[in-house]
Image 1 (cartoon, one colour):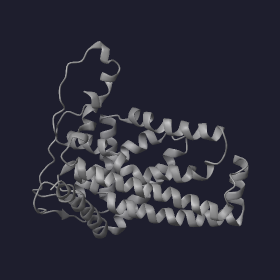
Image 2 (cartoon, helix red, strand yellow; image 1 turned 90 degrees about the horizontal axis):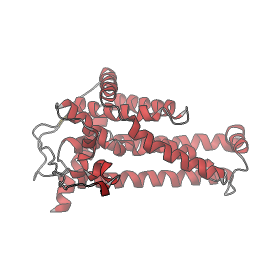
Image 3 (cartoon, helix red, strand yellow; image 1 turned 180 degrees about the horizontal axis):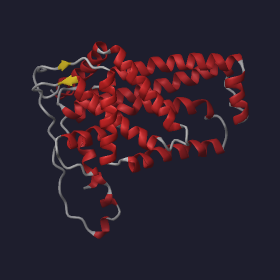
Length: 294
């Protein structure tokens, strides 16, 4: 029964779900609404705390050698692969603002208490597996081009990639494989995670709906994928600083894109279990400041 709930949600059978046709104007409107949500509920501080430890770890590893250089681009592009899962809290905040509910930052973690958490976790594991396979393939492509020896320096790495036939082959094949991964993730993730935040439909139904949304709107969704990729590149250029704005805006915009694309009909909303209340004392500081401890 638990497995059934993860796959198809709370209902015995999926209820009416309609996928609408959308156009470029809908993408523009979703981005505008996403920016409006971000300005009303600034979440850049959260992403600052998430992005910069990762950047720091990469820089620290570079300080001890250049073996991580070939994976910097695959790691950076991995933001697009795990983005739909990482933006769960943003979908919830946009949903609450749309419904006129309290939008305190602590509510971004309500998805953890949601009855859809099993389906969300299952899809999250799927996306992490996809990300891991992408990193493994990216490493194998580099090894096929240049062998197992790490780059001697940053300058040598850049020369090998941009100034040799093997480097051009690496760029062509790597970007081609990356495009396939990005298309798969866009197809299965663009609607599935927002839908699981909004409705208790299960992982299978959410995946099916996301695939149908892309199939019904192939050109529009392809343009959306290009917009996401372009904004991620722009956000990554100034030492990843721009991602602290780009990522939350895209997350909020994805929620509004879901709302314009999917009519979930009378499917049930997830139940959010109330957090257990407990008295806190000064001895709990600073743990009691963490939102998931409230």
